[in-house]
Length: 391
Ligand SMILES: [Zn+2]
Image (cartoon, rainbow, N blue to C red):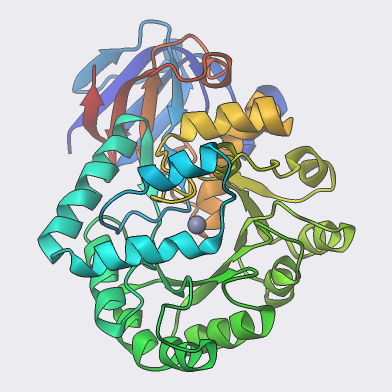
């Protein structure tokens, strides 16, 4: 097995809890080196102590971080909604109904068109440092189109999520549609999915419907996640906590009860600040959550309607500037906590035995991710030990 040592790392973010005493939340190591063997990290420590390897790469004093883990994206779709974005920016509010526009375009696309579109977006994410991602269905909304959306997504990640319950499509009643989602659609989707998700929101699905859909998914071997409390206050977050879901996503409108339920349950609140940025809505109160002891992750929610960004660095900058997370908390939320939100412990951390998913920044410190918003700082990416981006 070939080995590579990346040396001359001015600042290494490991996220390794074993290094917290000296390295803080991010387990920082200065003047560091990392040895990669095959797909895994073999060694981490001070560059002066690094063992020899077949290949040596000099980071030249720059920073290395774990690859971003984007735990929430909707990449399987066709067309775009730039006109809807323009309308929203010139005075019209965002509602869940715009999803139907993308549904029509997605149903009309071929498998090949959907696959090449996802490939383009995954490459766009990788070039910006994302090495692990989740992809949802949810723009098919028929048995056939949900199953094929997930089959397309599966070509790019194991973390696929059945989101048939995205919105009730035109021409059916909510009752009939929930029967379809929990019946034949679930049966067709389950072989291609690890997770099941519901858009629990006014204009989409209520708490009782979400409970029924998640129960059906669980009976088919899928694990639950939830879109909740994005546009209004409601019972979605408390449902997620009651069911012990790994993560509940959005969490923008939270009552005190919701915050205490999150803190008590350990369910991760995945915040998606690109959505609030792109819809001109108030941001979730990350500071309140972190201070209450809630576990917080950041993800892109990359989708054609409410947030068409694939940039985790933008999410970090927004979390720091608009949501009062510290730069360290925001990076940790975009890496280690993103992994936790997918119930993964092999990514998001740089330590022996973990996946060799690393990002070399064209900067001396991870702080530049928030300090230099909008600037492309990714100089190199290794995914499962392979160099996949370099510039
Ligand atoms: Zn979403």
